Length: 369
Ligand SMILES: Cc1cc2nc3c(=O)[nH]c(=O)nc-3n(C[C@H](O)[C@H](O)[C@H](O)COP(=O)(O)O)c2cc1C
Image (cartoon, rainbow, N blue to C red):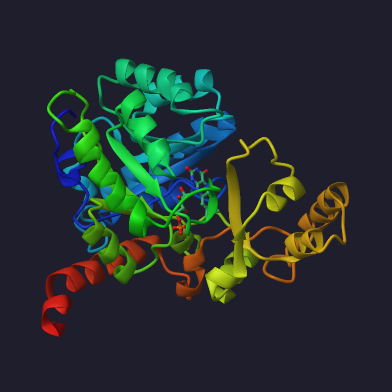
């Protein structure tokens, strides 16, 4: 994968503009990933920081892909038939500070997901070097390396240390965990593209320029078109796919996503969600973004201690009504949540956003100028 090919060249079942479903821990399972890929996108299964359940997810994905292939020719299942390689047309995501390399690697070798999406090393990109080296060595380059980063410093380190095939630039609007210190994709994407051209593409270096994917705050064709205009070659979305039929998500969580509005005012990136949930092992530079709820407001107001908040959170878990602003269970999502008003099949989300993006980029702009 040394030359700069289009995504369609690398993943023949995909269509431009490429829409990717991001790995979301506990939410992005095989059904979501397979549906996104079957619609001409690229779906990622979340391996998370505990990859003990990964084999079941991969074997289920292989089964679903075979099922989609058998339906070739039906109007909503056209694309996987173009994919004849032995790798699976879905990717997997791992959270590096926790994921057990010795468990994940043999599964990657066995099932050959078409991409592995690395995120959140304990310290820095160099922690991820063994993953990159071994995956490449043991899969004959069948499995592409995607690395998600959240600011220019991290992005440059990832390029220098890992030479990823794809760099996912996660802007500050994104849902779930992201860097405390980050910028929106609006400046992150073009600034990184400039850096790549000057720093790594000066003729003196053999570094392969990665493909750029934008993530964070993108939930419809308008955001996607903006990201492509900034120079991204694909977009990845998490929050939008929380409201898909195939997401593994409690329906009360999904309902809270549909109801949430004004993500700038009503979501926040905060470690309080981690401490209440008991997931404080995240490196401190990452915090999760979610709907401002009682877990957050009561703690910030000084009305509860950390241990109390933890206890109340776990009591609330037994009652799934407690999502959203008046609840305690975290409703992780990004600032784009106000644009997500309807639960749809994942394939329809992919097709609609691709269609709208194309229309905006190819026609609307010109007719309005
Ligand atoms: C509920 C949730 C869980 C997430 N889990 C993961 C994860 O396991 N691994 C990962 O790399 N990114 C994870 N992310 C971040 C996504 O990869 C992506 O950066 C983000 O969703 C993009 O922003 P958006 O939510 O505005 O679309 C998660 C995001 C959400 C909303």
